[in-house]
Length: 492
Image 1 (cartoon, one colour):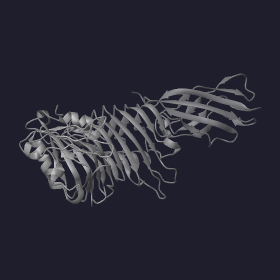
Image 2 (cartoon, helix red, strand yellow):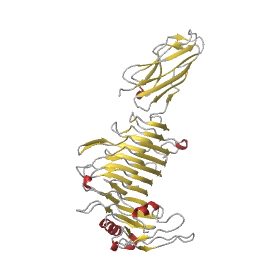
Image 3 (tube, rainbow, N blue to C red):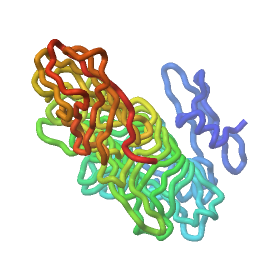
Image 4 (tube, one colour):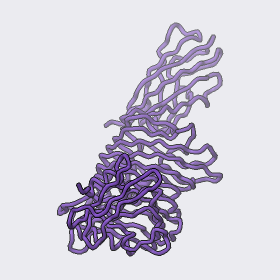
């Protein structure tokens, strides 16, 4: 039975079934087998794809004339293949294993007066099918500028292909895609390291993006993956990337490069993001970040700050020990936030560290484990030095998942002969743990000549001074002051 385009996508770009049997591609006119191939342990063969003349489901760019050895510019052959697939109402541009040179942007969008036809660019695997981009701007630009509510088809994708920007010039990007529904990604991008170079640029120019899904592997790009909103292109565009599920894997060879960026009011909501990767170190100061959120935009009746909202956020990245490392998460302003999310924020993989986030309560209502950056909620910020003479131990604070409450715990030893007075400051802490009035936190004092276990609360002043509020005394022996509690930072 002839295989459908969808069944071939399910099997993978090579069209080979488990056990080595090759799929037979069908001629789109007669629906009879066009060619067959077999796979042996010694020889890898590929199925013969139909050509554009038969209005096929699949168009092979090599059969159209593209050079898989990368000797000549293949941009025009990709354009021809796209047009043939679109004329057929959708299908696959097949890019067999090889290296293809592209010198100018290859665009894929509905032609004037037509509706959207999903185009899938399918290669034989990320390290088998390689596009070398030797131009500037975008290598591939994919979008739908037709009226969103009138669309009857959606989908499309970029699968099993590597885009390499080592030969590009100026500002360049591997794949620039947006304004689509149910677009699929499974690709590799690398070496887009020019000024504002971007590996994968997810950018809404005309409407919004929903149900984007897949996997991106990116390395050695100035910004590896960017969510963006170009609001000036159309009065109907927005920064929304809702119900998107994307796994991102990054190798940041240059420590000055960013990992994942959300900018110009772009936001992910009601979806999932997974960020995995390795980030380098530098001998000089760097301003990069594993995750960067920047920009606040009001346009086209929408107002949004770049952020991640109501989503699963799973970060597990590894840094390099050194004097200068990328920041874990950078927030441009209070308008940029991670809100109402769950998952894990792990910036301590393999025991290495990142430069701390500039988070000032920009991460709130996060439910899950956080590791490797004490500025993030869910971790204890512990103070064990800076105490008056004669006092040792620790005072620790932890923002709870709601983002509105703080847990505090302390256990201090007061050496014999130490004077302790009510109102004495024990240690100054980060003001993010303080509120507008003096917080009273229950505690107890024992020993030092006091009679029994004495109620001795703490004050936390608006300036962040953690103060003793028990009875004044001079210890006739060692005494212990300890306590814990939860208090509210803000109502809501």
